[in-house]
Length: 123
Image (tube, rainbow, N blue to C red; front, top):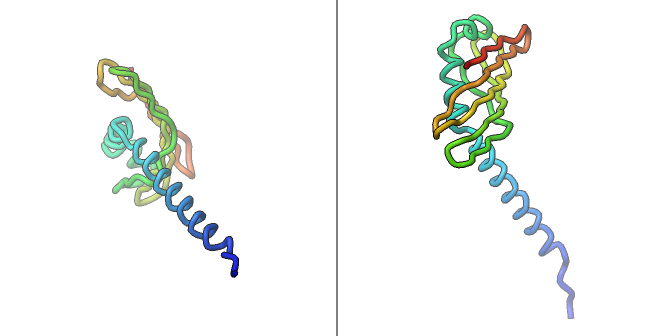
């Protein structure tokens, strides 16, 4: 009687774990692209100071990292993501709050790779 090779189970198991973990990671990162992300990206694209720092045609990078917490009609977001313009790149740090089911930006910090950070605080 011939004994089955353990590789017949190990290789498919490794492939399954790799595919599942990649899919799960992409799903979590997609969740971070919520309303705080969209609000901050709109603000950045309309901000002339950001355009002067990194250029026109601002596009977001990947991935969005950080945390978003929701508790009914309230919540808090603290996220980071990269942007790229015609001239340079930058990192964006966004803090936002959700009150009565409406998100508002609290702070947006844009730090170009080759310059000083621009901080915008909202109240």
